[in-house]
Length: 580
Image (tube, rainbow, N blue to C red; front, side, top):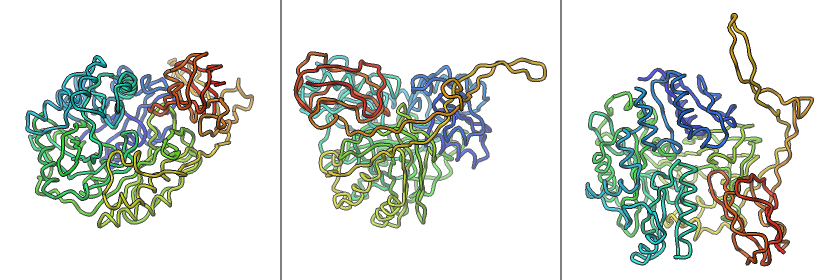
């Protein structure tokens, strides 16, 4: 086993890996951006190194800064978590070239399976078929038009080097192609550092089924059951459960064997997830995520296995300690993602901010994996996952009831959260009857009146600034950086944080004062002053917490004033345009 592991990530997954390492007696190294200096994962780690910067591109996607932290720390291995560089073959190779172990698959396997197009080809070579799609990158909108004409709409445009719904856009008609391509590439670049995209037929009512696979360096490959991840919004999961319910046992076995075939075919090692779409009794290969999944705790609860500890053991060269025949699935588990988002009657608006208070649930069969604690800031620059509520029950009905009970105990003030929407899903008869699909939340679930108001945090917080000073230790001078109270801004070294301004967006109904509903960055402006616009037309695109949000006008008229340009940062309630 390793003596020291660096975790090249942040938030909940960094906390999860740190805790697993500590239980194994492994020293942990955290990395952090300027905004994460006091984050939970930094507080828990044995040591931590600054990456600099605020955005993901400036920090957690800064290869040179990460490699420097690895060198300085003397870490023997690196766990990438999920997102960021977890599926980046170049990063994995840069680590292994330093004779440091990458806790994940070999770079060659990432290249094959991390690129969704080569992954489709690899799956086809072992007899596993996917939905109709292309095996070439999209370089021209005409490719999408030709595909749509042959296969029909909708068409899914997807990031070739991503996952988790990031960089995925669904095109319902020719008119949407160009904007969808641009949006998918922006999101893919922001979250994965690459903008290659491809396309495939978008099934209208599928269920999203995953198979957890594990492979070691001794040629052993097996699967650890299935998960159903169909309750989604914006192609990102809200609720996952294990095992996938309501599917014949022989079909689940066929999925598992297909997943193992895919893993074996690409020489896979460590934890991975093979994803399928299931519709009308048939299943289609979707993609392989060459990393640990957000929803791995659901599998842990029904198998009794610590998947992170297993990752570490496999990366250290140990063989898998069991065979496929030893894997047993007991009971049912449900994982509920708690995101800093206002359900906003189905709009799901990101809600960054400081967590004023958090009371987590407890009781038999209840687990809560968090990346934040009271007083921590959920930043607009990163993913908005606060934590994951995971429950186990002897059967699915018990697990659903336990999840509802635990959600009602969970209290978070500060940011708005998805808790009300999670309850609406779990308590709906369609969910109980397994009559839901990947589009069910957006197309069927009635979220009228369902929302979660952000709580203004009118607290005092210490304003700090960086000071570079020289210090002398035992006669030797060092240059150090310190974050100290900003006396210039306030003689007492403290500043009053203004309450967050809450707005539903659009300003007062029909006023023409177009406000943004949340803090974020304007990444695109669609109109110019003097343009004539119709009610519902997109004026600009706001990025918050790695999600793009169209800001529309609620009135028709002329753009009298534009108050923003691409690149501007805005706060919730800020007016971005005046329509008259």
